[in-house]
Image 1 (cartoon, rainbow, N blue to C red):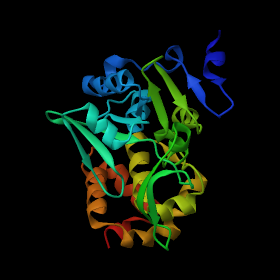
Image 2: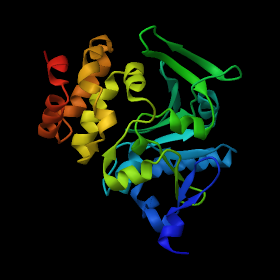
Image 3: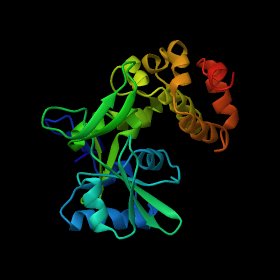
Length: 261
């Protein structure tokens, strides 16, 4: 089987499986504690994947600072497996498994909701997401993440990367692309506009046109974002080693005057 064949392994759900031979990520590059969490979930009969920024950063040759896990176990089920676990959050219910100074964040697969969904979801009249604790499948979870490059899942059972939304190609092309309608996704969570500027600066990625276009127009929505979240994102923008590129990105996309009036 050629590398092209390997890269095109997919099924009817839209899942594309990139095997170990093609993506090059090694468990040696991962947090030992994150692997402990993944294997413990699997031993207990749950699905568990390394997800998001860690997978993205490993694919571009970076060294992730945080290792997050996604699972079909509910937060309460995760807590029952780990004595060193605490549950946090109202807007997003999460499990934090604590290993000394390292915290492995474990999130249950989330969905957009339905009559038979487990959990609760509340949306403000202006489109902002106030609570998002509807649980679903890994396919549901992938399509409701923000950017395609953050919707990649590393599976320990076969060391593959699972891609449901074209994120692997976008990582290779160094492109930042929102999943779904950009206007709606920014209205759900205006802080995503800052995240787009920050990730583009951090990774040296280009924000694709449809993802970039609404930002100057919707930038005033940041005025309604929680101050704590704006503060946290501002720290990441300017204290993570890419301050100049972040500043230029904020200015280029019309965010600077809103964030720092």
